[in-house]
Length: 469
Figure 1 (cartoon, rainbow, N blue to C red):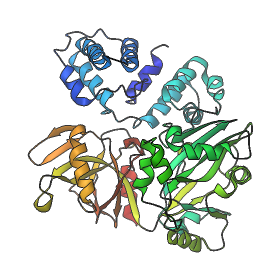
Figure 2 (cartoon, rainbow, N blue to C red; figure 1 turned 60 degrees about the vertical axis):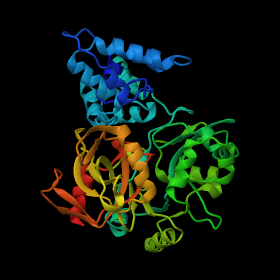
Figure 3 (cartoon, rainbow, N blue to C red; figure 1 turned 90 degrees about the vertical axis):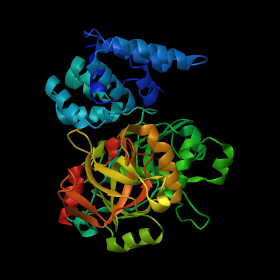
């Protein structure tokens, strides 16, 4: 039982300690002659990585290297390869989550939906697997929303059109879709925590948001929403400017670039959990507590197209269409939430980059793009593009990409699949050129998405579904 949690964590490419602060090149340099026979246990590896992760202070880098060198020396060749990929993200953290949820359900005899809900509330597969194995259904039902522990976010699926999105929903909720950063805020009395889409805490970096939530008319609350920086005339600043706030605690930057929150969901209010309540009920609580900070939108608008046009005129991306009778559930839940944007965009993984020619000589330019394999395999290549890359992005890519390099030739640097980039395109077409069987039409880079991981990228199924358009 003691090895179950780290085993699940290892299989999904996520050590229980998270990132241990040692890079690819350092690990490669520590590799020595592998052991002839396997002697390592999962528990030993987990304990060893825990020691590495907690090592700090003077001489900590040398001590971490010593600990890792000792661990790798005890590993066989296959084990060394696994550990190297595990610690550098090569196992694509989270990509196998759906498979593991079903595996936990099958192994422990509990419903998959119950496992999925426990993962949403606990924040991790490893903790959920251990609970299911030790206490079954009752242990999973014991997971509750806890103030100060982030809930995995509910996500939207793309819609082919506004008409298709509202079809079949008696009273659809239509809201602005903002070009901001996802936030989840927890308040318990005067204690406030702010988390990103990936559940990373950023409270110190966004002090003005914490202060605002601290002033809301409630004793405790959990709100889901977006935040973005605005210009003096109230229009959204570029996404990159908003994201820059999440990496700095400098007071002068806070004063220069204030963030404005727009909340669209309420998961808890004054002692009452609302996850299982309908969106209709959650919105009532949201309006009571968030007031002017609720995202613009309407219930059953007489002219959804006018609301879409209003959002675009204000500088936003489009609209969200939501079913008012659905509960809150992590991930993409069918047609519960749909996003409508006038242009097609995909979040894809950067697989490689080619050295440029002409004006781009000396820069890593043409990107190889991959869609996520829903079965957890390697991302599936669906195209290339160099369009939309500014001089600033070219310089950044050329500095950053060698840090993620896992191979190269005379023309191309191949990367570990970690970076997500948002691509705008006219559509897709069938093609035998790429492994995905499709090719992107007139693809251009919109921006990188540091708020997303490779596990958040669009799947190959989402790409091929665009053929119908």
